[in-house]
Image 1: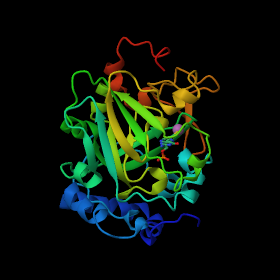
Image 2: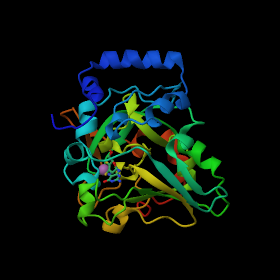
Image 3: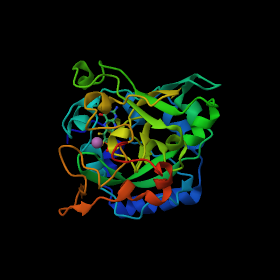
Length: 317
Ligand SMILES: Nc1nc2c(c(=O)[nH]1)N[C@H]1C(S)=C(S)[C@@H](COP(=O)(O)O)O[C@H]1N2
Ligand SMILES: [Mo]
């Protein structure tokens, strides 16, 4: 195997799913908080890779989780888009071994009363970690079901007291060409940028993830902190976030800069609005042979459709 990770995660890969599920029930029952879980995981003095694949304690079960079959951990961690580590699906798992997700801090900037630089531990302390099993849909036509571990982005943003002018939130990925081989080539304008409208950012389905399958995020999935917005195409889920900025106007996100007619700001999953080069009506769930129908807002319409009432979703794609 080419994945360079702590021995821990390799044993997880061979753990039968039933064992994983039982462990999850156990963790739920013990109800340990995020602070307790992360103190040990993120705060220590271990070498760079020790943080990967360490168990997180999940305090809450989420009513937002789907009960669909989970995509195997192996697929979740070896079939990735993370252009900072290369353009092929298996590049991020091969070439992210030198990336150091610890220590980590995030700059909070723009239109808010409490800007500053916050360590990851500081940011996480008040927030109980939840497991959120979400359907994920990439704009390229594949989908997965991933058990994320994280907490609502809105709960964090409120603490920085955004002002009334803050209508959008911009996110920035770390810029470290020495650790990210893809950033040594200008395949994309670095650093990777994404954005959400304020109501989307505050929506209870929108989370910041610090883990998946009960453990800290592998580098290739956006360690140590990434965005997850399940009703939008996967590229909105920006990885390895180092900056969050409150702004007045919609941020120009990376894929919109690259190909504005193909990738819009909203990028809500929509089977009726085709990508200029392919249909979005169906998707291939990783691990399945037959394609399945793509659902409006990726199946989250009941929760999110009202945010787009009256908007022409062909124009605001
Ligand atoms: N910084 C950064 N974030 C990124 C990307 C990227 O290339 N760079 N790719 C996006 C795309 S296209 C998808 S589909 C998801 C994939 O997330 P996963 O590899 O954890 O499944 O990450 C998104 N976040
Ligand atoms: Mo994607």
